[in-house]
Length: 139
Image (cartoon, rainbow, N blue to C red; front, top):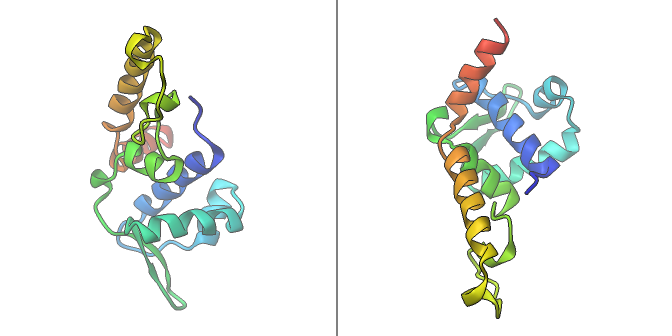
């Protein structure tokens, strides 16, 4: 399983928003700080706006704000919103692709273990945890 550029950039953008929880953050600030195209970030931020993860403030002092506390956003939630399923194989997706081998597939056991491990990690790390890691890196 590989996280796409969209998922990686989305996570970095949300961390930027979390760094300023009571102040709006402009997309061009995120683009500059993270060396990411503004156009690409605009596409990603629309996903978060529609999902009510962030809200847009218009005007000269405008930008984006998180709608919740950074501790309430898991990395898993952010990645699933931008990536879709994090399952390593299609037969484990929520839409349950039919496979005639499902009942006798011994390898499904391995892929389920991988999925569970990935979900356990990403669902137990929040934006607040990433902010704490950032503090350690910048000291």
